[in-house]
Length: 95
Ligand code: SF4
Image (cartoon, rainbow, N blue to C red; front, top):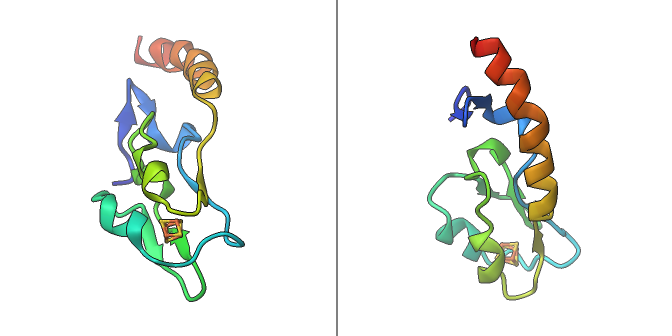
């Protein structure tokens, strides 16, 4: 899903995706089963975030599925700040 935009901003510029605490993860694959966007993949000792930019901007639903709270996201306020910084840049680029 690389090369997609979000509100005219290249998805790869927006640092919104899950992080897995590998010390907590019990590798039960619940997040992988829950998310249909291929964000997660099975690792040897823990599930891994294989395709971070497949994550839907602003979505953090998988975090609630994790029984050991191993999944975290940036704060929504940080996302708003990033979008507010990037939007004018890409609006100007589009003319
Ligand atoms: S749901 Fe939580 S514990 Fe299970 S694989 Fe995902 S991150 Fe690991």
